[in-house]
Amino acid sequence: MHDHHHPNPDPLAQWLEAETAGRETEAEAALGLIFRTLPQPVPRPGFADRVLRAALVPQVVVQVWPVWLRAVIAACLVLASLGVATLPTVGVAVGRMVRPAEVLAAAAGRLVAAFDWMAQGLAIFEALRGMRSALLQALGAPPVLVALLLLLLISVLGFRGLVGLIAPERSLDHASTTG
Amino acid sequence: MEPSRGQTPTDVELVARSLAGDQEAFRQLVLRFERPVLSVISRLIRDPATAEDVAQETFVKAYRHLARYEPEHRLASWLFKIAHNTAIDHLRRRRPETVPLETPSSEGEGNWEKFPAPEHEGPEAQTARAELARAVELALRELREQYREILELRFQQGLSYEEIAEIMGLALGTVKVQLHRARKQLAERLRARGFHVPEDRG
Image (tube, rainbow over all chains, first blue to last red; front, side, top):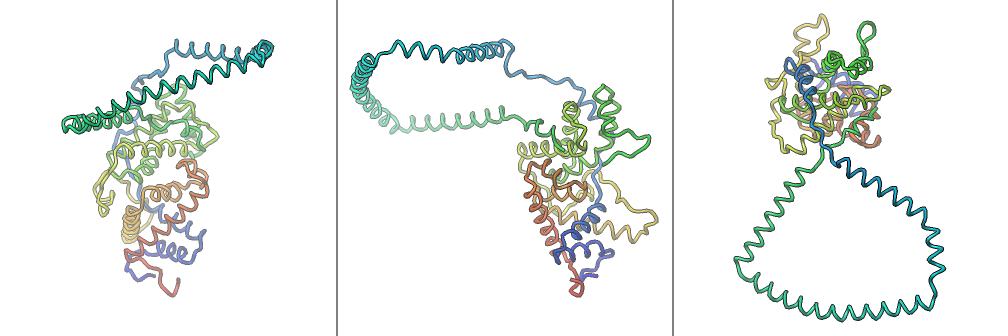
């Protein structure tokens, strides 16, 4: 049946032939027959009892948010929704109070204040430049550089550890609705 | 996978009894599905002891979330999905796993059932069946995890494309493509081991 001497080549030859010829349905059926001859692994004796023992161990329920925090969040949501409901009324009242001349004067005042702030910012920039020079000088010293690299390494390791700790197991939710 | 008729309780009945606190009912469910579940997991995790641990974790998760099972679906599919997710979680935590390719589990590692030989099958036929299974097992071991699992679900567990897509979290089209590729690769591996179609038939 095939050039490899084999005691019972028929199912395999049948499948390979169908596969080579591109006969999909036949190939699937033949491979199904072969798979049904494969042995299945058997758990060690007492598997079901071990499962039951493990399943009956009380679970430690980790409550992410305490009750009081959830109550506060709920209260905030209620207040926020009440606030949204009153927005149109407040908007109309504010609209009546505002005059264009006052708005323009206020905008001009803000513009001047902004330029003042930028001028102050330039002074701060000068101070930052000084700090940068000092830092560069410090980084030039090998002990400081080594200490910084060590800190960086510790941070990376710490971050990896944290990710490992908080990475949640894949949720059972998407396993619960399968068909 | 379908429960037998008559005296044997159905999967849904056993689930209902388990939910009502009947531990023996859940034990029966475990006994009913331990082999297929372990078989699926073993396609992803080759170490038999680890695969059994993951199977245990699968059933424990199933027990604790049994109320979420929807009886209109097959219990086997639900269990396979939990098994798939639990095994993938395990692989993500424990990579890499190294097991030699040329040592099939049927030869000493873990417990494997005897070949399901039909009645009145002679010793020669049984040997031939065992050799065929061994060849396929060895070829399967050379495939990537996803291909091994998809072939297992389709051909050993007899699931539909839709069920496989749901279990593996893949689109239906992807399942069909992957299954096709897996079959082709398995055939290539077997051909590489000396199994060929005779030219007068091919």
